[in-house]
Length: 270
DNA sequence: GAGCCTGTTATAAA
DNA sequence: GTTTATAACAGGCT
Image 1: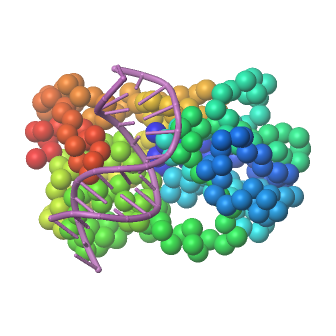
Image 2 (image 1 turned 30 degrees about the horizontal axis):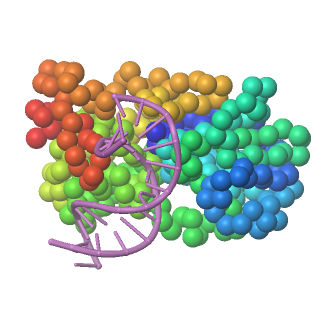
């Protein structure tokens, strides 16, 4: 499931392929009307002949920056972007295809059709729904403390909410909370300074380690030519129900928090 | 074959 | 106003 490290991995993988190329038009497959937000006519009018200045990541979005505006691609659960390769034409579940003026293509595959593509003429409406980048200099311990103390939510729900901090999803939230020894149901305004410091460090460590290992291939995440992320084998709690905690040897259990399957060590995370 | 699972948004309820 | 829960989306997997 693509979270910040997985999206960053895709962006780094596709950057050399796409940067500097010009977009000709987008084709939508039949039945993919919800994949594109807005009409195909308006989209193509806006992006036609625009050069991809850079490929960037913001939150869990892949950003194709253009001279005028930008395109956002969200993979949601099962979305995948492929640069052109010989065998790619045979892939099932292609929902949209970018044609580049070089004649090359960029394919958007999405089994469950939750993924979204959108053109934004300006960044304000896009940015206003998004919180701080957790790996940026802006995300200091003090910044996190302020966010936590002015809320009274369950810490897991808080961390999943992209309006506060972006990029964390079910996998990396569970991993960060284990690392910081914090129970996911704890209220954010009841965390003490030591816990806040540990959580701050844990968020940065798990995300950076995720990037360093090209993400977590647990279910459907792949990048490039069917490459798998290597972080799955470094996971401490996620998808490890019944295994022993590597810190205290207690059993990892699964509970429900914020309507999500949640993995914790019952002893380490009280 | 019913239910699970997940990111996000919308909406309802507390 | 804030927080939590639930449904919806879609389809593969158990």
